[in-house]
Image 1 (cartoon, one colour):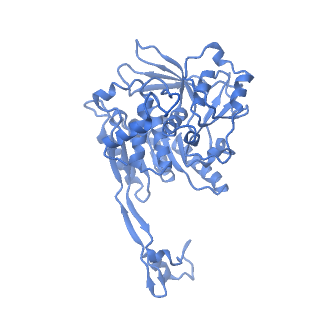
Image 2 (cartoon, helix red, strand yellow; image 1 turned 60 degrees about the vertical axis):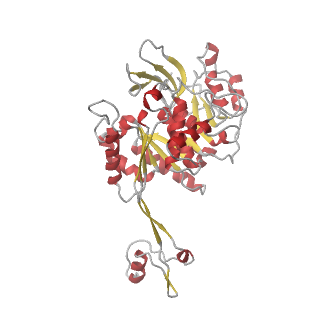
Image 3 (cartoon, helix red, strand yellow; image 1 turned 90 degrees about the vertical axis):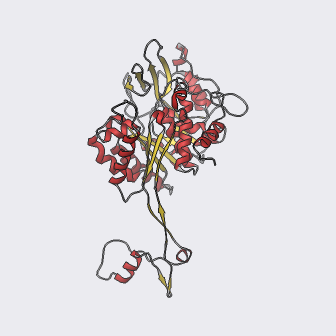
Length: 445
């Protein structure tokens, strides 16, 4: 059955009902999407004024994961960049209030398992479920090479359905404070421009854009497009391999075959130097090495107290025959003259950031805790994004991301949400794990 090119044809529903049931391999009845099954979902609704801290335009995928023998494959696993990034934001958003600030979109085909619907609704997020019985759900095959948890092969086994800016239109998801994009450089530019235009129509401020480049187009021929995209977004977060791909390298230490921290730092320096007058941040995800933050510094102009009380002279456009040159150059010197008083702007120097944040599971002992790294990077970005939306620094946001990723990689598929009492995932309170980790890296807050 071919996928519909026109999007979902069914009536969308907001998955916010509390169904506490972990995902399991579906039985034949699990794939029977009868009217009664969808009716249970479509009865839910979301207020138009629902506050949204995070939304992702990453795709939803049902995964099958193939490990090296003798470990058996895992089938019908909730996956995709959209699902895992939503998980990362959801981990720090306990139900029932904060959980609804996490937004994502799930396109459900005719083969969609009821067990996965139950798992999604158990999270109580602002998830837009869109049934379309005319197509199959997007599914993917994941395969790991023997003896490696870093090198993964992936391919789609059914036609994919990706999301666009129009999918946010008419929903509270358009109002999100942070938006996660996973796409090519040129598509990122298109999405950012479209979203900003749509938000401007509603008099909404610019959101925080977190861009995750797609691996297939992290190649030298896309480097120029990448650098042209950087000024449009707030965070660019490739993994070490994707970053190296833009430079025509592999990002590995030739002697050990492990991830090279030196290669990561040098590649970041090259990208930062390519746009010296722009301000943006690179957050490179490097598996067991953690993540590397690289933000270019510069001057930040902060009006002095006197200047804040003065009416500023604004000069726009090119020179005209009647341009007041004295006022023009006075403005360039950042001085403002008013009734003989001079109010000079204060200049703050931003030194930028160059810092490694270790992974939560680091070292030999930590590696033993990693069961399946699938989705760890996407989960990291969900945690990072929601932290930035809630006013955290980039360093602390990366800690949120590393803690989120730790929950994603402890098992095959999604971590288990506990029932009753204080919310837990895999039997642990997320905030307690975060507090311990912040202490480890010297960022107690």
